Amino acid sequence: MQLPLHLIISEQLREKITNGELQPGEQLPSEHQLMSVFEVSRITVRRAIANLVNQGLVSSHRGKGVFVKEQRKVTYTLSSPMVFFEEDMLRQGVNSSIQNLVFEAVDAPVEVRQKLQLLPHQTTVYLQKKLLLINDIPVAVDITYILKDLGEKYADDLQRQMTFPTLEQHGVPVERVDAILECTRANYETSEYLDVPLGDPLLVYCHTAYSSGNRPIVCGEALSRGDRLCYSIELFKQSTI
Image 1 (cartoon, rainbow, N blue to C red):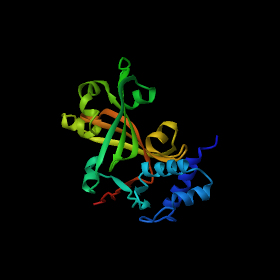
Image 2: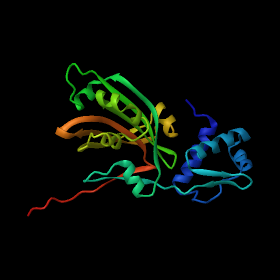
Image 3: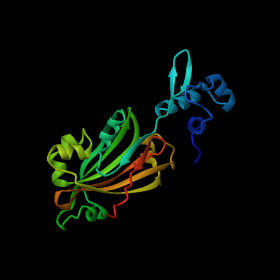
Image 4: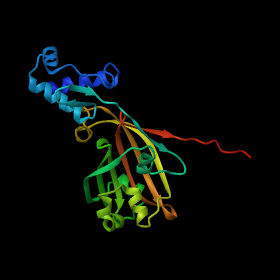
């Protein structure tokens, strides 16, 4: 299935931005130039530019033109002792926020039951999907499964705030997180949320969080844009003394 013309144009321009052919501060070709190069209408060109604006790649200035924005990739450090995402962003001077997409009680999938060590009669968990935003630009989709008692008790706060700090504020400490980094490709849903082409590569941060007594309380994954968010890992050699 062929992509619409405006997406084809915006993707070609995006590639020029990401590979450095178009530098930060540089002006994009005018509407007339783009209409001539791609042999399309003004409406198609404007939709293509709007795609780039929505992705945070360019800014449009009335009467001046469209300019490439400075692209700042943020890094989340996976270290011990553990630092929560928003705390790490704040330390870097970056504004992070969430947009709640889904919060509902669901039957726990088999893999979730195993990770959360649910008993046979414990079949319900809370599913939350939320967008992670950096400076108001979506960088990741977070899909989290939360124990039923915690989801019910702290539903309001969980839909407004990040998961781990919310639980800790209510006396549920996050003592340990087991995590795996993988990769996948954007499906229709994530491509819409993150404003990337269908099939674009995404980083996947899979995690299971444990509270006191080694009790698993949360598991899930964060699918992120590799051009906006990356992970740094600190490794320390164990002393032999």
